[in-house]
Length: 318
Image 1 (cartoon, helix red, strand yellow):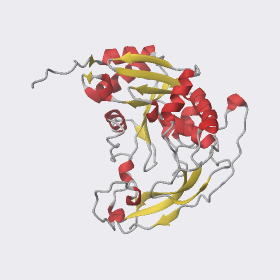
Image 2 (image 1 turned 45 degrees about the horizontal axis):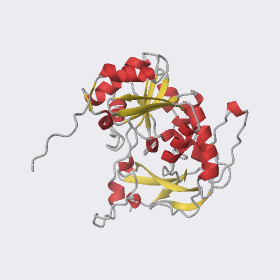
Image 3 (image 1 turned 90 degrees about the vertical axis):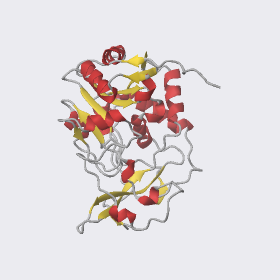
Image 4 (image 1 turned 60 degrees about the horizontal axis):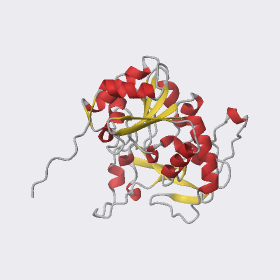
């Protein structure tokens, strides 16, 4: 039996995306953290470059564009979940180290972030696994400091986006991809919150890759869709528009993170959770972390309280 072609996909252009962005409130001088799914639009004429050009059209020369530039392909082999691999002892010493100029963004993160990180004038943060890339006058402010420990906390790029009252753009992506929600995980000690030590790669003296451990929160995206849906249902600030087949949203970071923190404290319970492979020295993180936001809107001052020593420890390369 021969079947006909499926429904025709819409053809999306630079102008159409730019108009959608302006409907979302993106304008000259905006600071935006952008998550994208090219496939969700339909057919984007020109691909990732078209999306980038449309973003620049809306932002103008004074706007700052930030994208996740994550590199999970550089994680320690002890974290690998694939069951189809042969024994691979010694692989860790031959893993490449992170190079902000050359290391590609993981394919699962998207084509637009990989384009942005490679642009002349773009800057990229230093974290080996969860870097951010930025373009625009405030790029250095956003990505200039990204400590190895507590990767999604207020001391890194997400904290600078909070300071700048940035907006999250989800262009065809769901709430499960909303990286800014990780900020809320560091804010509140919900039941079952845990911290441990996570391995990062660096160049060793003998040419082999060396691994060192840093303190880190075990983050979890499993309830992000429910958090986002509850935020919208509660009337949180959000704008939405359809471009082609893609539902696009614009959400200010601050009210979203405040709402998410309250909801996680009330509804999230991970006490029965099991730490994924690769984590060491996992303990309950039921007290304040040393990396919280100082929320001026609530006139709160948050003081540092260390739950781990900050000195990195070396991990075996096997």
